[in-house]
Image (cartoon, rainbow, N blue to C red; front, side):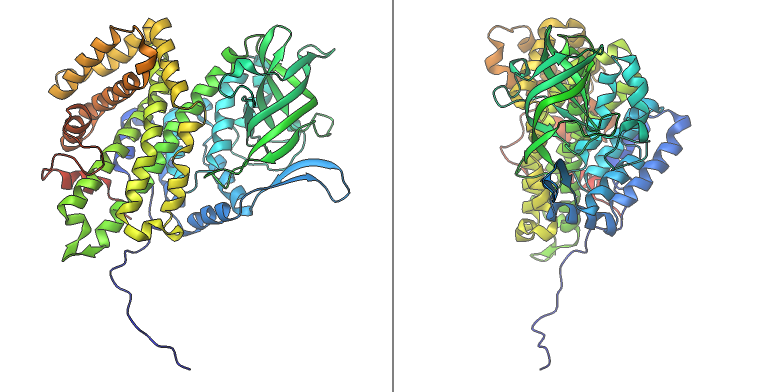
Length: 545
């Protein structure tokens, strides 16, 4: 029987595919140009555009769908009953991770402008699929921790900064490229890692130990090596646990189960038991937190970058949809109320991107003042940017109406992913308390922060007033812990405002300062003071294929 046509499909936007995720993001492009030396700029732009076209391609977008629809599976034993503790991933996962490695997302420490180009690339690649960002981040962040031991760094750093993805489990000395994971938290302690009970017993060979205990969250369990914390005779210490020993045998690395997570479904997070597990000490005994803290700082910045990437993709999808969708006699993009919503979302996204790239540039600079800025600005940004991600993605999904609640739109995956970076690497209270410690113990960090904010002095009266209020709050730290979140939020907004006043178009900086700092803002997105300039804010956020 012949088919019956009841209607013709009209008024549906084309898919946002086949575009350059990097070059279509004006705020990101400008940040890269701002923080990259002129002699390197063409090379960096070309490199990021190649990655951007890949991230926006139909093929890579399909890989992201496949990796999330086919999550990893744990295989504890082989068919004969031998313990193997392996994680099977869909081929799309390996393609995504391999592409990220080949694109240089683990090479920041060994290339000029390495952190800025890598940060921009990480932000771009997150928009294709966020789950592979975990092993990319851990591998990147392990380098500064390993550098506390020159011999270990000489052995492992060339593998971690390689652009070759070698997924086979075999001795590290036989591999050109390697991937790292991390295990810090335990059941009884969580973020209080000093409560860890995993024991490290010294072996006869200097610097080697036997570990007994567990890790409640072990990231990227398919990795070649892991940095973990355990209690040695002199206290909490950092260790390197290889997945395969030099003689080719598997190290004792007992995977108990994979976490059944809200989002981040393509990525494996595990519980692991150590039972006579061989490990190599990294740094001095009893100084484990100090040894691993640079790794933690680097992964926290990646949480900021990851959230900025998720926000950017959510805003790009919302603006794209409203550009083509018509209702009530015209494009949604041209409706005053929808324009207000989109502009508000775009402000949040641009502020996150601008701040994240500024911090990456501080890593490239490496001066004492920039390191002091990072000490305060990284936990501040981690606290605020990651918390803004969920409301942005939810509001962006609402811009698509019912279509945004359907898996095929891609927005539900962004929504599920959005809380992750606020929880991982220390949740909100941990970040706020870290800021307080820096304020109380490291006056050079506050000086660097105020110097950075002060570069915009006199450019916007609302920013100046917010800085004055912040200084008053900083002058009264009595009982500050109970109001630490309010203080850190204000610090983040002032830092973002100062950067936008200096670097963003006037309409962006004006709308941000008027709403976030000047008090002319409601309790939901779409409550900006309405001006004609909002059209320019939205147009700036529109992804152009």
